[in-house]
Image (tube, rainbow, N blue to C red; front, top):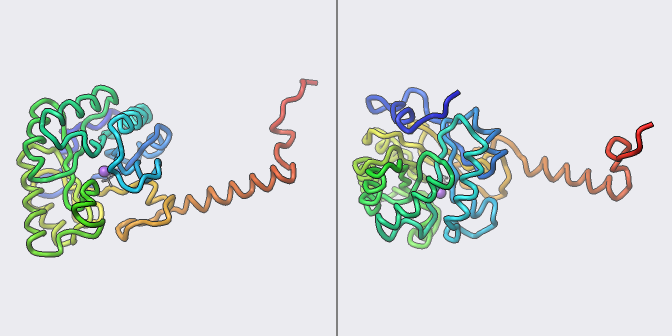
Length: 270
Ligand code: KIV
Ligand code: NA
């Protein structure tokens, strides 16, 4: 199986609709990528790794070096899915030139196929600058977690008419600027449908609508590794419970000396 390409992903959206939705999940490690890869079209090395694996309170303290280390691991662990790496807060907003310097490092040092960055209208010039220089960009609009301090929280967006218009305008602006796809997060469903119908690039929803051109979730969220998740997360497993049970059995066996057994120790051959 050959790795999916940006044009192949884009071709999935014909005449304003995608027959078979695109499947995207986040991945942060090589082994995780290996397991998810056959099931996905795209793997996203999300800056959500800040909370999910580094225990940070938000994505704001995530660095370019962190994204590059995990991005390279996910590329090494996959061979089918298109791998995208999030641009962390502070690495791209100042100017198109700053964004290019950061994004070109991500591309060169990880081997990923493109980057994702948050922002609509305000990032259009930067998206055009990167796209014209060989860096495919996935935009991220709606609820943009790097703007949590400006937005005042992680609540759904697009409730007022004004916000609806703003987000629709953002989506159109990034599509026009040359983003190859966009993530639409945490918006009223009606708005998600409107965005999907009004841009000709794939719209990947999260907390959006089943009528988007694809879906993404944070893998640890859908696996039940986190105790607090947004309404839009569906839990497909309860991995935290599985790990808790295994650790409890291990601890009990260490304490009563029933582990290790004969099978796990080295002895001279008879
Ligand atoms: O960082 C992330 O995981 C993301 C997805 C939720 C879209 O941006
Ligand atoms: Na992100």
